[in-house]
Image (cartoon, rainbow, N blue to C red; front, side, top):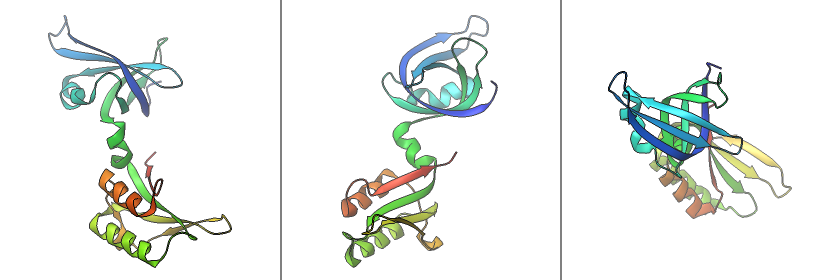
Length: 171
């Protein structure tokens, strides 16, 4: 209770209203995941900033203060983003999965070129699966740090196939 947390859920209900007390607009949002449901209250700045991301059947990532005093948990969001955006926006590492027995020098050169086109501040790791099925993590030089994005993922997977790209999120 009263902790700062991040949850992911599917928007199942949206109710816009105007407070009788203050006369200001608000939005009550219900989200669900496989564990249960929670309510979100968007008011003031959070309503203006994040209302566009709230729609029924859209998966979202919510960061904010939780309140578990009642039967149904509530959150007061400080950040709301679509799940598709969050994978990249919250990343603190990018992993490119390579199979040693299927990836040659040409593919490695293509990956280098892709990393150079998507320069950023996120460390890039090559995750190599050897022919013995061992996994080796190689952190690339900082000049190959990248900016996580859907475009980066698409380019990597065009070269290596799916799932060649993985963005590891900040906790």
